[in-house]
Image (cartoon, rainbow over all chains, first blue to last red):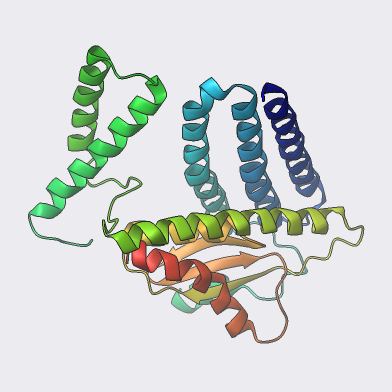
Length: 112
Length: 171
């Protein structure tokens, strides 16, 4: 039983680490800040959750605390991404030339 | 924002208190008298001071249907989170970097603060979308890969999946 849990935990850790790697790659490759935030927010959430799940398999006694960390992560990670994106847009951060539609900018111009 | 009469504030405080106690007990991992007393005191002070704040069950409808929708919501949420990561990995790993960004506008039916917060968060963690701004019932969503035809329908699909669950949970 212990061995099986160890193997599952190890696999989860590797899975989490690879998603985090893709996130890091996304930060480098994506064209503008919004796309980078997207890459960062999604992969760190799932990557960290899988890492926590892996840790829970290796150390079942930590289960509740790891679950609590996971809950906080799910709620706070997207909020930080949204605040970053919102601030970037307010300050007029550069958008990738590929961006075709920006309804938010259109609506704000309409008001001003 | 939502007034439920005099009971609204008391209900909010009670929910906040229960949530804080639950977290405190999970963090400690044991039920002993001194831990319970300290936790109850601190949780009470925080709950009274921040009764207008949002916590996980603020504005939650404590009905059986809401709990079932809650489980459905998390099942759907994790499925979408997984899909979004796979999709992102595919974009990042493909040499041509096939992105087609756009910021689109989408309307929500949800009325409560917590319901809208959960919707915005869910959008951020699902395939290719990121909430940038929220104004009343309008959400502005950044899209990594816009679907060229039928933008209106496609944007409606961004929210509809989560909305059906959140409507039952928070309204």
